[in-house]
Image (cartoon, rainbow, N blue to C red; front, side, top):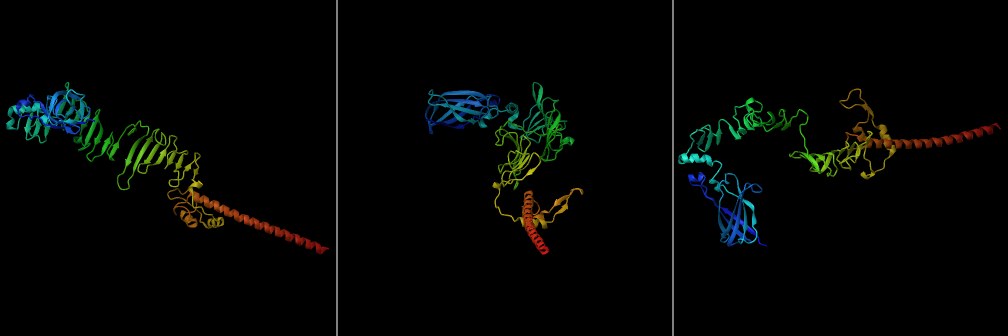
Length: 464
């Protein structure tokens, strides 16, 4: 397979005369090297040169075809008739090569080659102004025009002033007109709207500063329709709408619709909240689409680093913690590490996870011992701090419960499963005591009946 490559080197014709500035432009001299399969070629080639406004895409300004170009050990030189197209803005050349000449198709070489600044010595966006200065007294800078509007001052330009300290100084603002209508204005700092205005002179659309009026000193304001829509404050805070700066970004609204996020993604619409400090987390607020693995219509708080959905509200209003999707109004987790599926029923009853497959470490319980422990457990009336004096509760403290039974995760909480288990074991112990007592009563009753029968028989014999 033949591979044609191209390594370019550009040499520009420098402007050294006033005539060149006036528009008598020499051609751009372009030199380069053509290689075939990595080796320089010698012979005759056809070359195409297209001038573009961008490296990719853009507008083609000019095409020049150079046929029968002599190539000696890969090297060639071509004069390109680029003139007014080199107006001081960035330009790129696309080159196509056909070698040998008149054989086969042109091969486009990529990427396009950017013209260096040297060719723009011939013409630039300032050449029209520079012509007057050079004609007058270029060798005796600084230069000036007879109108007194344009001045050259040690590398700085002043319009309406010859004492400007900036690179470009304008004392009465700047206005760019189209068909006698101002489309862009840079206003004086002492006007009602200092800054950059878009549209006519009566328009208040643009970027400005109201530092003169004390609203946003040393800040920047954005206006449309005569109203301030956004402000960047001097300390970096940003406000949108009619709202005072508070947090780093504040958005104000009169109708309640302050901020909205919308997308048509079938996966999700995401708003991320990230803390990059040590131990910080990356959380996402998600509105799910149909391609999300939990289905569409869910609101999700997701721990991005862990890859887990921490909180979910489904389209039916049911909520889930550490799980995606819930068949109950509230569900917590799905395994021993995140809640075991404990949930609140539609009727308002709390259901603890108690699947045998989620448990381990089974040990037998002595119901009599538990009953004795319950009997010794302090049970009091009390209320939580902060509750009204008319509120009463009954039960043990977590500390007494833990000390008596050794159950639960801490001495500050009592699990409902543990309290239920203790109650059931104590009931079993009580049942066992009652069974033993009933058996003893039955035994004593039978003994009493035997004694009574014996006494009656003896009394009867004594009478006879």
